[in-house]
Length: 335
Image 1 (cartoon, rainbow, N blue to C red):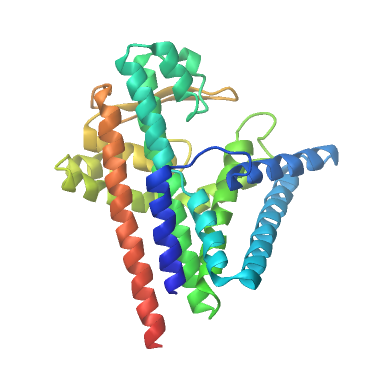
Image 2: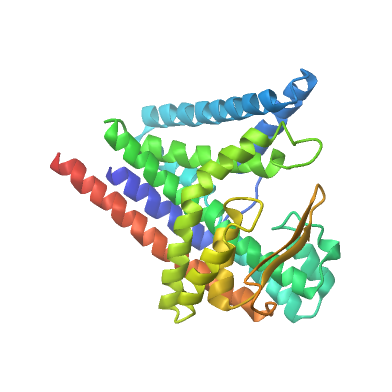
């Protein structure tokens, strides 16, 4: 069980220190290539429907877990420290918080320079919207909404499923670390599938539906728990924690996705800003839905206020999950 705590701590430390650098053998990029491979195979086989989407999820998850378990088996036969390093790498690669903060900061700097074209180019790296149609306010909203939502699917949900995996391994009297890392990696695979095929357009309306619904399920509890941590962080930073709860309660279900608006509405309430509106994607358009519509539009400085709020929320949630894993370890020792 101490392995779970060690891997967890080092994975968080690595993300804080070096972020999530892009390279060809990044696990998420490999997962993306696996998704594209099976998507192509299923399309050529004429199974590009709801059933094909179910097969896609099964094939991708089984492939990802096969390679992970093969890596674990190989590392164990070499050295116990290599085994730990493999798992640290997997969990660290599943987290993407520091990288989002750095991207947000780069957009903030471009906006401070009044360089809208540069800001659009930089914001295109973290959103899937048609950035050419974004004015300054639209860019600011896009960054704040992306940072807020990324707190869930790029960080908090990974920690949540890591702990659930650790708990499952403990309850089944198996190696908790393998379950914890496998759950984290599986979540990352599901989230990546949703981002690649989970669109409500002509091509993916049926084929991507199962992946989208599975991602909704995986994020359902983390999204709602995130509101609590954002609220507590607001109190620590002496921001509007009451507004956080009020706005989240009122607006968290306004988004077409059952989870996307949870963290966004909480942040809107904390900073007293209006988010949302008409969002144009290459594949679809989301009609005007406002979060915190009683407030005014965000300003440039609200980008940094958002990243500060989310980083404190991340630190707070990390402490809580580390404590839970430690307590689980103590229970394991007593038994």
